[in-house]
Length: 250
Image (cartoon, rainbow, N blue to C red; front, side, top):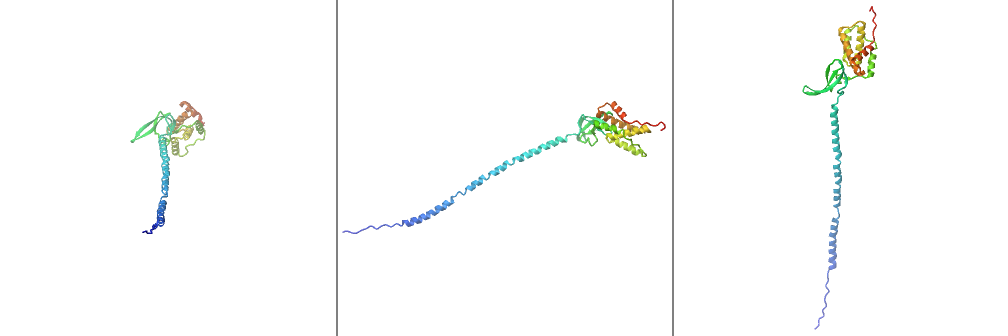
């Protein structure tokens, strides 16, 4: 007995499922590929952008130089503050006393404060005077005149003298102010006017002492200016003063 049997073909839905599965599998692959872009690279660039900040730290070096440069002028000012207008050995003139030599500088404790003083040795009076070094100019101390100015002093003696007039006390006060001024030209006027008054009608003992003091001041400065001895300076002064011829019946 024979039977007719034929095998049935087995059907698989592979194409349909595989296509669908492939489609589903590709989409997450694309999404994962989209998430992979190197978006982190700009962050790396930001890290490199920090380099200018490092340059700013190096830019602070000039500021350190400026602070060092400010300290130097301060040291110079301190040294400049110790300088005085005169020095030991200078020939100067002190009002009412005449020419003098600065023989030394010494520090004196005055009222709890130490100050520098110049010690002046007056040329004619054999006198020493202490003058504060920091304000010697304010006290009237000045350098000795030059040779050219010394010639101008002699020219002052040849000018017309000023007489006392009716107001004798006022004239005496004016002469005193000229002697104490420290100006050699004003002192020369005192010598000229009193010498003339003495020759014409005589002067009082007080005016004689004033004339002697004025002559002493002139001679002391002419000695240093013209480099003369005291005797030669006196002779030069007497020759420069005009002689007044007084009539016998005057």
